[in-house]
Length: 267
Image (tube, rainbow, N blue to C red; front, side, top):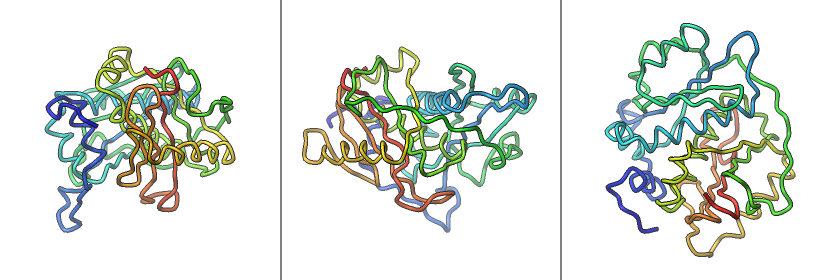
């Protein structure tokens, strides 16, 4: 897992070994990355597109060198993302806040630089967290599972958890950033230069369980490890990360929510 800790990728890789300390008595230590989903009333986006946009925007912020002073204390804390929805003028307003907006197909999302949850910008604080959802379309899993020869990274979501689109957006954001951390630096740079292409697939509980077994089989293989509930394997081809949720909202603590993979081809 050697890497240059002075680069954005090296700092992100450090997430795989940090303790994630928070002090409940000090609200400044509880930090989150806001992820804003564009959800217009008319012509709502396809759910998979919106999740892809959220994942791509999240990892773009995590590797933004301009955001280093905001990322470093967040990397040291528990990794939280809070998804909110916006439309019309409220969507336009958050474009003026530091972050990254990404469009995938029918959908757009903007991830903002992390900040203490007690210091949320008023333009963000007024946005609703709950009350919106989009229908799930189940996807197929290739016969090779995680190591299929895919044209870009894939994030699999366990649809049996019945997460709202906001909860799922936060989880795929975890998946994309941890996959970037697991990739070799050269591979991560190629992925970044291409605009972080990725596909999000929500799959049945049975299919997701089979993918989890593939991740468990990595134990003891070169580059494999587990830290803070994240199972991962570093590298390019074969790079992967499995996210376990802390259970703050919607689902039980310890639930495995997403698995992100660079596939058999890598990036």
